[in-house]
Amino acid sequence: MTPETLASGTPHLTLTILVFLGAALFFCALAALVTGIGADHREAFRRRLRRLRGSAGAGRHPQEEIFRTRKRRKQKGGRLTGDVQKRLNRAGLSAVAPLAYVLMSLAIGSLAGLLTYSILLMLPVAVGAGLAAAVFVPRLALGILTGRRETRFMRQFPQAIDLIIRGVRSGYPVAEAIGLIADELPDPIGGEFRVVVERLRLGQSLEEALGDAAERIGLPDMRFFAVSLSVQHETGGNIAETLQNLADLLRQRQHMKLKVRAMSSEARASAWILGSLPFIVMVIMFFMNPDYLGGLLYDPTGRMLLFCGIASQMLGVLVMTKMTRFKI
Image (cartoon, rainbow, N blue to C red; front, side):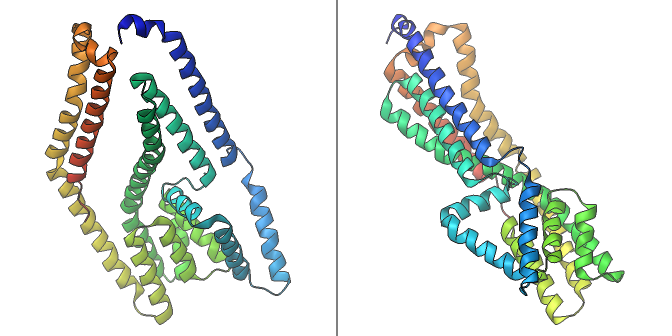
């Protein structure tokens, strides 16, 4: 395809791009509507509180109503919806509905398919690129948000355990000591423990509240903390000493992670340089001599080769990035 042929099809291509962008914006607006951004969540809380009071008036414990509500949600939502909601909760997006996540994925896939078709003019490749973007791009975004949130949580976790230790040694019950975390520390750990405190006030046991928090956060350290606190709460013993050992272990692990990150900084810098260098050289060559890259931009085979090169380059950067990350 020559530049003249491409220029003659520019109005049709522009119209197609605007149509697909409008569809993507429609999906985003619908997702925001389903999510309920700007809605009044206090009314839902009042309805739930009325149900709890009604169950208490009928002779049932509020915790029984909580379990029944959770069971109805699981039966109604299904396994797939529950998995999506877990990933959203771990990323700190608990207010986002799973349906909104699905619609946003469709919008991203539509936009990626449009851009691929406008460059390659090959429908099967565009459909494949759209499906891949719809599946992997939202998961990648959630993974990044989840990683950042877990990093902040683990950075605050030893300090939170120290608050519980000081509270227990001062004579506070364990539940009251957990409330100190909710009052003193910021999100995300403060918000998670506020949920634990609210569930304790509604009548849920300490074991159930901590177990739900560990499942919602999804970190092994939080699971170990919940199990340790539950066992010590049931059997007794020196809970302050157990938590002090856990806090020391967490600090040692964080120190080791920082040390590994510093030692692998050279490899990560090399990955970024090698990944960005081809794109930088291509942009420089395009501005210096546009005709030199004309075959890649105007010929269908050249566009296919360009697409494959970009995909392989991104895959190589991803592999190098994974090789420089270690779990401790």
